[in-house]
Amino acid sequence: MRFVQTDKLKPGMILGADIRGPKNELMLAAGQVLTLQQITRLMNNDFAGLYITDVYPQKSPEKGIISKKLKDNTVSALSSFLEMVSSRKSESAVRVYDELKYYLNEIIDDISSDTNVMANIVDLKVYDNYTYYHCVNVAALSIMVGAAAGLNRSGLYKLGMGAILHDLGKIFIPKDILNKPGRLTNDEYEQIKKHCQLGGDYLRKNWEIPVESVVGVLTHHERCDGSGYPYGLPLNKQTIEGKLIAICDVYDAMTSERPYRASLSPSEAIEHIIGNSGTMFDPELITIFIKKIAPYPIGSRVVLSNGIKATVVRNYPKGLTRPMVEIDEPLNVGGSFERNILDLFNDVSLLNITIIGLDK
Image 1 (spheres, rainbow, N blue to C red):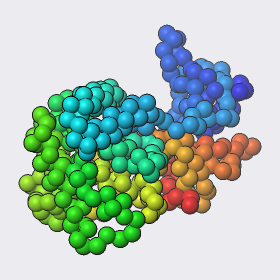
Image 2: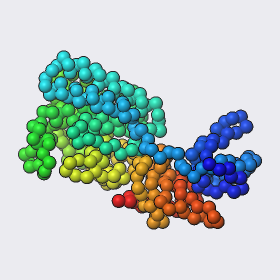
Image 3: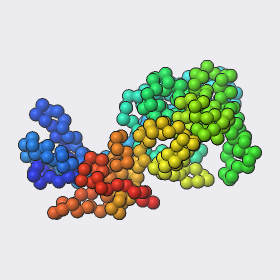
Image 4: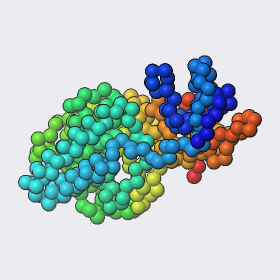
């Protein structure tokens, strides 16, 4: 860390220590990449200089939508519940169901407490536990987007319960079909399609669960153009629970590594979802969804429009397509100053630079 006089500051320099005003109010936080407007403001306020660092502090991925501990606890409760249901151990299932509801409420409280929360990390799921992690991820994604859509606390619970149990019906499908690594036959695919009805019917008959949650389980494979199943419902006959779970289910599945196919990047999955707006997915919900999903999570390798390759180090909720990046080779911006951090969202001198793809 070094001290630099204000008249020697350049856009792109990284602030090494907090800057505070006359009343000890925080003006700029350490780690901030300086813009021209901020430098001008500092000069106008007679700052002699400030400490600059060459190391951007935030290099590790953020926690994601919910903490790892909360996710693992929820996965454990969900797997126990599904195991009890599968083995028909009713009394044990009741106890574990209460535990699952507890963790679902924890997820809702965790997400609701941070209005800026977004999906900002690729979650790599273990093959053996994919089903459970997938269901918990879909629940967290659905709750996050549902909160952004304006659902109240009760609505988020109904949505979340439907999302976390959306694939429950698969425990009634033969395992040799579920785990088949190759292409399914038409008959096998018809068997798979029954999981929505089987799951919804089981929950409706055996558990005191909100009807909205059951509808979410039943309809998460319906599509806007009526081509989905099990009922072939058009858009105006579907509820927000089913429509939202449908988007989050497809997104998490596409970004997950599976034994029989490689995962897609978040940006590629988002392109698929946007490309099916109005046919598969509700356009209004897609508009909300893409504002909460970082297409280039921290750690992503990207290619800029000037041909330079870079690594994403920070995302901005209001500018997800213009993150802060660290470039491989310092960029000369005049004189002897070279910069290796580019803030595509805040630095107006970089408006002509965009991300054009992934560095694969």
